[in-house]
Amino acid sequence: MNQPAGAKVHDLTVQEVRAGLETGEIVLVDVREPHENAAERIPGGALNALQSFDPAALPDPGARRLVFYCRSGRRSVTASQLAQAAGLPYDAHMAGGILAWKEAGFDTERG
Image (cartoon, rainbow, N blue to C red; front, side, top):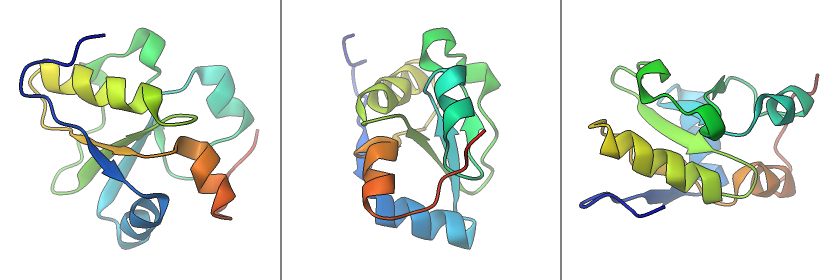
């Protein structure tokens, strides 16, 4: 997928995302598939799977920052690019995805 002209994606560390979730400054969006989300997810995240990605269905973050995440960080970059191509200002993703989140020892939900 080509990056839209002017699209810029900012890498946030799992530590930055966790801190933003704790302070309420971040809205997290999982772009993995529903079965991946059902198996394990970061608590508090919304789901908007990349395969059927709909920028219009993204949660309104208000004054907070919307941040995409996936398994390893590739799909979340694409989601940010697609959101920007649709005219939305969402330019952040969690580098390393849920794999890096778990490697850092942070909690996930299952089931």
